[in-house]
Image (cartoon, rainbow, N blue to C red; front, side):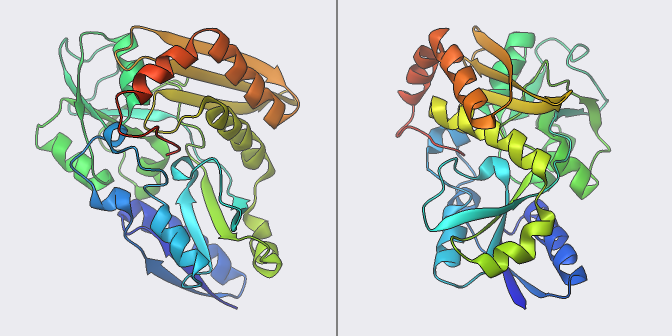
Length: 310
């Protein structure tokens, strides 16, 4: 079977697409990768939180999938909207890589040892909020671009440190400036961070079966829980919401964060349950009762449209 994979053109996206291609070729499939430029790739000089475009890293790829120009799409799960259109389904969620964020600097620092007033680059309000809560003295500056671009800006001295996802750095082998893998208790990751999603046209049972070997039960369960929480809060990766689910002694545990961008308020909630959907909704409701709605209303009011995941 010839399979055409739709992918963004960044080094990381192509690593992910090639990773899936390698697995499929081992199963006897012929595979081609089609590079598709997305809205998020075209808008590189504006902070993500100010763009507010639903599916900004996935919309054009989904259009190609719907039109039959590609057969499957490989996404970073954290970039994929929580509510998929009825025309699509997720055939597989791959085994999850390390979900943590990483602090990078030269010389190497941890969050504790960064000099007072250090300039830290990130495009994420989620990271910004948690950084400011831990270190109110830090200067947080907008940082966009692919992994290589961000590392070049750090090496050029534009920033004293930057924060990136561990999974992307490890996949590209670019860990040379990693100073600290930040514990999830200090910086709660984005929902789905570290997992890859393989999207197909809904009802394509033949392709679903061909991809089923890539579907990881634990990754699907934990990321579903995180994405349910995200959807229940109406947020995405342009707003300061973190979520990380894990299985502990046979029970599902969900840790979540909603914070003000300036770090002045950080709401943390952790609950245990059996059903990922019920647990995601329960944690979202608890955060709402504790003031998450007010925080998110303030943030949504500052953007052109209410942002969705991403």
